[in-house]
Amino acid sequence: MTLQTQLVLRALLEDPAKQRYGLELCELAGLPSGTIYPILARLEQVGWVDSTWEDPAVHETAGRPRRRFYRITEDGAERARNALARAYRARRQPLPGWAARPVADGGVS
Image 1 (tube, rainbow, N blue to C red):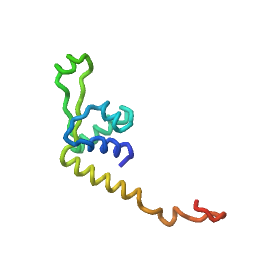
Image 2: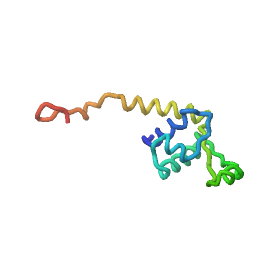
Image 3: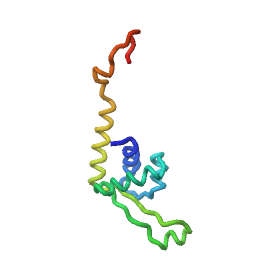
Image 4: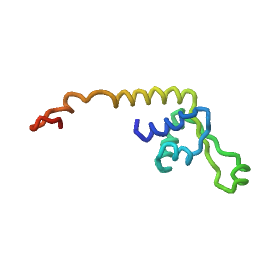
């Protein structure tokens, strides 16, 4: 799982019941839209995220483009939490023996 996907999942998990639109997720995750939308599409494809389009009357009244809202599913939230926990544990593992080989001056390379 990429770091970018982890950031999107964390943003969605901040309030799993809340629907968020794409640019809002960009701000929460600190990622550009060109990164966010493909991730959301993949998460929706595997069933971790649902999306719905905003009612046309709302965006027309507001004078802005129509928003697509995303919400993590119950199953997606459970799977995301497990995946994020695994990713966190993987980062916390000590370096394997081959990665901490000594160098000539006594340091670690």
